[in-house]
Length: 398
Image (tube, rainbow, N blue to C red; front, side, top):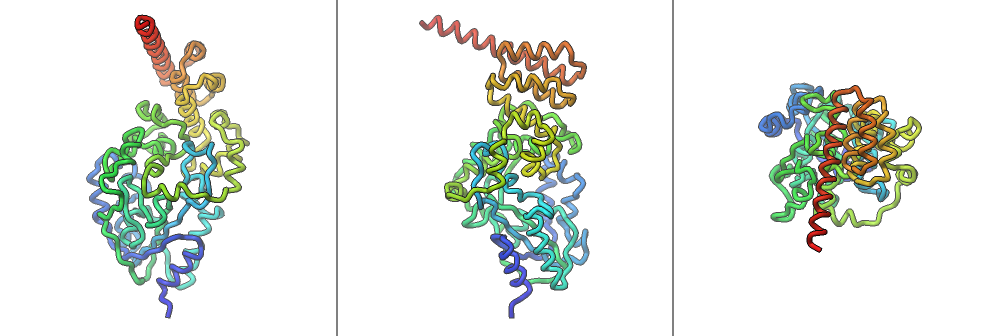
């Protein structure tokens, strides 16, 4: 006779999940203590509205809890357009993360929930569960030094979901939570992290993470997180506007999958033809709806945040061709956008950039934007002095 656990697993695999495991709904006390030990590094998370510390004791939140079903979805199933890589993370391009019906990823999870309910089993309302840790408890994942969960033979480009149910099911053999299958001594992910957010194996400073700053740098996040991306992060963000894959891209455990020839994604191919940093900077309503929102819905980001991120990305190109477009946004009604645009112009420099900033400074009333413009002008002046000195030294060497 096929057990309930086997029926659920088979159905979930049929829906496209690559691995399914089941664990008891016991307290995750070690996870709670680990988060608490990291102090205010994670306060925006632990003290946020979803109460993850409470959810780590599922029976206290939902007394009927007996088992947790963990599902892993491999989203590295199609290729990703070259002009979007390095700008939008693969998990967002795949439209997998935080997806709800009627999006296909949301329907996939909903179909599993519906199947479970059809067996007379209750499913708990949404809980902010530590899926990566639960994946190990359910025997389907192991950890990597870049803090990501890995599925053997698949890698870390996976999205995990967990469902708490009111039925005792057959449990899978857990993976030791210290299990790491990274090559001995490998620090590729740590060495590659541009902001040093990943500063040691299994250790991350979220507020320095590029992914965090493109999606979570909002006043509403609270706990010291604001709409202003920290200066120490901006210059290391490259052209990223939503997400970052660097620590996964350099991981030897992902190299084989990343080299695979994969079919194209029709929607991404359509979006990529019009996708550009300049288009995102100006963000006409039609542009947002057609080319940004389909891959940028995950954190319910308003267009203004993508404009901000695009400004930083354009500044990091240091390409004077973008000065005209950035100059237009110095007149944007949104002070946050003007502020980051001023920084971007300062990174590009040139006499034209200086002129744009000086003109805006004479009109600007917002004190934060005025400060950003002043700092950008100082940056241009400093770089000009360095270039002049380098020129004199070169002349002297001749």
